[in-house]
Length: 313
Image (tube, rainbow, N blue to C red; front, side, top):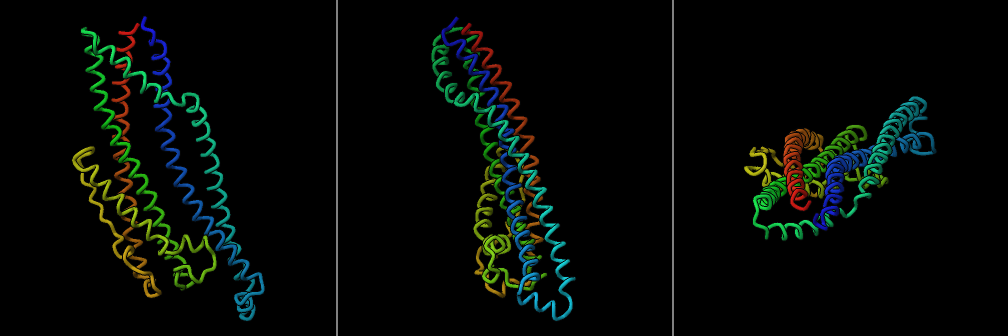
């Protein structure tokens, strides 16, 4: 038996654990990013609703105005009801995020038990292959053929992983922009303000209602879509994304008061409402494609390990 046989067998087992957990954690991390983004938006909405309640309850211009017209109790009840709905939604999402974090910790603990196995495997495998390729036998030749085939498959899988990560990042940015636009639409209709955030006085509210704050995200998303299109067409899935990038006006405007006409906001809302499902369709194609290639890679890797063990035993 070769002196590296037992070490190689142990590393193969550890590597199998890592390869099982990595895609699970990738999905959970993506879900956590999505929930955290939603939670930040709900937190801003909750703070806005609580501030509205405080305006009516305190000694403010709004409180005096509604007292004078005899509508204070009615208005206060309305604001409290909206604040309660916002708080319920925030708490529910907070609980969901907490449960997700516990699940992530469970897989991270399991992954720590095999920490560094891929690096150790990467150092050991070349040593074994260097010895095997010097031996002139059908078994050793089969090992090298399988290894070369596996290398090509792993390169393909890596490209799919990169495209899928890029698609997830683009989706997150698109959903964030969708929320910015939805909030600007809601608050402009409700309060008839210029939502550049300069007169709100609330940092979190400004962050999630200001279209000016969405500009850098729109720029990043534009670049991501172009890169995703270039990486997919004719190489991985052989299909055209056919996704138009609707942010040219948002990227070049300076966001003065006149920008916040309702028609402009509504146009962007239509654009982003088309973009998000289109990106979701791309992701829906990438995920099963990635899973299919991962299975092929796993099968070929298992074949390689079996062949190596047979040679070393």
